[in-house]
Image 1 (cartoon, rainbow, N blue to C red):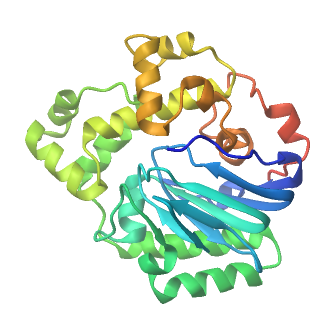
Image 2 (cartoon, rainbow, N blue to C red):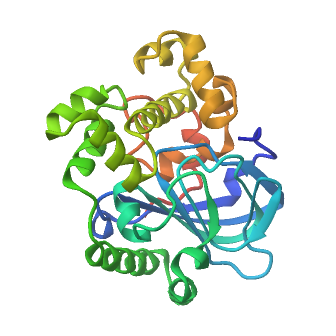
Length: 296
C-alpha cells in the first residue's frame, strides 16, 4: 500500500459502536462522523476482513482510490485490496468488517473476496441504494446499527454457508492468531491438504497459508500500534526475527513496522474495534482518542 497521507485530527471525529445485542457472528461495525478542517487522505492497513464502507453523507462525502483511480460513495474492499486510500473532510460513514466466512454469505459466492475494490452497488445492485437510504433516514447510530444488523442478518440466513470444514479452518486460524500448520488443520477436518487448499481458496478467496499470514500480521499491527517495540512484536507473533516482521509489513501494508505503528487507519481501532485490540496493553493513542470518541 501507499504510505499514509495527511493524518486526520481524531478529536474532530466521533466514533460510535453497536451494543452487544445487535452484533452478528463474524461481523463488526463502527460509525464515524467527521468535521475536519482540511481534507485527509489515508491508506487502509490490510486486515483479515472484507470491508464495506457505506457513505451516509451528502455533498463532498467520502472518496477512495486504488491503482490511480478515484471514486466517490460507498464501496466494498476485498482482502488485500492493494494501495487503497480513503479521503474526505466532512460527512458520516458506516464501516462494516466481514470475516471471510461471513463475507461469502453476505456478498454471495460469486463475489471476489480478495484483491478488489468496487462500488457497493456493483456488489449489491439496487439493494445498496436502499440500504444507504434507510441508514440516512435513521435518527441515531443505534437505529442505524439495528437496520444494518437486520439487513446483514437476512443475507446471512438466505445464503448457503461455506463448507463446515472451511469455516472450522478459518476459526482455528483466528484462534491460533495465524500460528497454525495447514497440514495439521487438514488432519483436523479430515481432508487432504490439497482438498483443503482448493476449497478454502475457492470459497474465501485466499489460501489457508496466506490467510494465516494475514491473521498473524493483523495481530502484529495492533501490537505495534499499541506501542510495542518491533523486536518484541516479532517474537510474540512467531516471526523468525525482526527482519521477517519487516518483510511481512512491507508485503501486507507497504510500510515498515514503524510506519504501521503510526498508521492513522489504526489510531482509533481501540475504540472502533475493541474486540480486536490487545486489551492487556494500554493503547498508545487511547487517552487522546477516548476523550472525544463516543462508544455506544
